[in-house]
Image 1 (tube, rainbow, N blue to C red):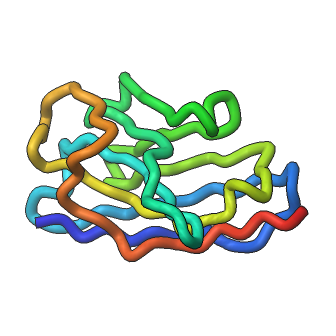
Image 2: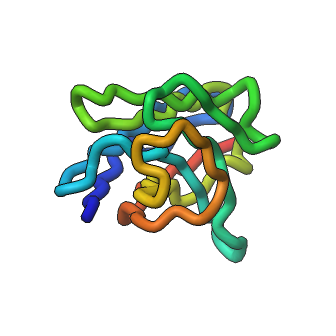
Length: 126
């Protein structure tokens, strides 16, 4: 069982930066691949970035490559998403996710996550 709580969302101007955090707790909170997804109004939830349990491997969606960086601090059971050069099209609710299927396996899935946070709103103004 994993509980995920996101924080750090808000309103920012285009070109600005935000850092999202996701704190994991629960019996199986550690050792899982983690990811960020986002859902814009009227659109399906989309993959943003993922990171292996060790932090050694990452993957990114095409629209955020070179602008966003995912990282994790396993001592704190926390995953981060540093978002730079933000664009209005980055406006969405951002969700943190954990995949307990691959606990302690160095894999970086882009789908199939089984635990989700409640989401945090990111709004980028033009």
